[in-house]
Image (cartoon, rainbow over all chains, first blue to last red; front, side):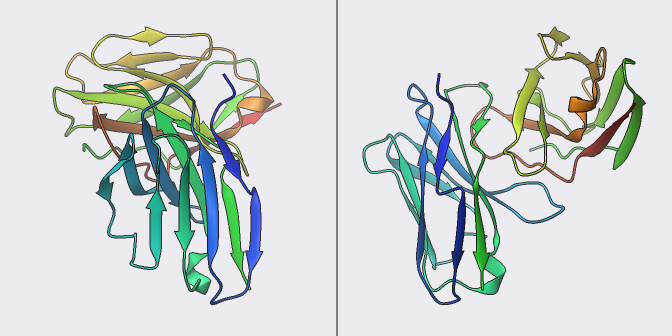
Length: 113
Length: 109
C-alpha cells in the first residue's frame, strides 16, 4: 500500500498563471476527493469522484477550478488565472465504498506571488 | 451531515491517557463518527471510526455514548509525537467530510 500520492508538494506561481496538481489514489479505491485548507482552518471539501464521474462539487469550486479523473484512476485539479486567495494547501483523499474512511495525501502547497 | 463541537485546545502529560471529547448531538442513525489528526505540513491521518459500538485499534479507542450524541477518542499512553490537531467528523456513508477547526492537543513532557 503506497498511500495517496500528490505532486508537486509545493508550487509557487505568479498571479494570473494556470496551475495543475496531480493525485494518485490508493489503487483499489474508487472514490476520490479534493479539499482545500488554509492556515488555521480544517480542510474544506471541493469535489468528489466515483470512478471517473464527478458527482459532487462545492460552491467553493469556482469556474476557474476544474477537476478530472479521466480513467477512474489518477485525478488532476487545475486552477486557471490564479488569484492571491487561491494560496492554500490542496489535499486529495481516496476511499472505498460504504463507510470506509478517506485516506489523505500530504497535499500540494500553492503560493501565489 | 451532523456538525460536531470540540474544545479548541487541550494539554496532556506524556505517558498519561489523552481523552478528547466530541459532541455530535444532531447525528442521525446512519452517520459514522470518524477521527483524524493532522500534524503541521502533513495531510490528515485517519485514526479510527465507528457507528454504534466502541472501537479499538492499535492507535486509539473510540467510545460512543449510547444515545450517540457524543464520543471520546482515547490515546492510552500519549507521547510527544501525538501533539497534533484532532478532528472529529460525523457523516453518512458517501461523500464529503466537514472538518471544523478540531482540538489542538499538546503533549507535555
